[in-house]
Length: 255
Image 1 (tube, rainbow, N blue to C red):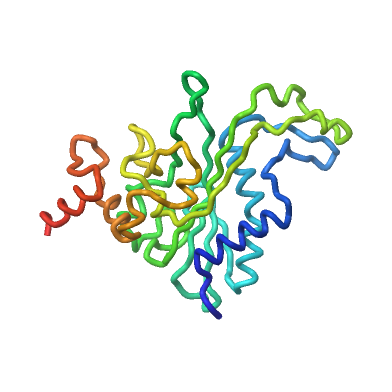
Image 2: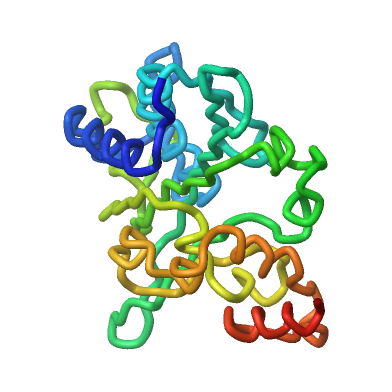
């Protein structure tokens, strides 16, 4: 059977979103006693909601192509592993990422970024199996399904709602937009924040830039992206490069 390509996966995912009329909205957790508990605007909970809504679509695509799909524990990369019908690598890693819009002076939209995982763990030891479902070397592709939303204030006034009252309960987020892209095409040049060792996506205020994958590594490929971050120092004072061109020159000097 033909391998599942990124273009085929993205096309099928977007098609299924349209066919099922998915709005990515949810209002709370349903309990067997008929109560619905609102979950508020907690970012971790909202991320779990998006993952739960996307999972059936990913599974449908995997099943149609004969791929085995496996999930991971919360702190283990990736959210979903797709293994081809041969049950042998290369595998596909799919991660769900979310962030919310921030507005500045005059309601001007700030550039947003996604956190794309640590650069000090399995990326530096590709053959190891720490914080990753399978060793990094077994994955041939890394894809991101990213969600951007706006927080809604003042939701969840009650402790719980009855089903007949659910119409009163607002979704704790609005204006959901999503993209599906190869990870290296959206990876940026700096950490997600100054005090973490997490890779950040390139900053933008247009989700179309992520859909098109116009990041700094898009013209250089996954291998260069991996090497850039594999050698990226944790301490700011040790960093010898901050652009792809500077990295390539640094790498040449090292060899």
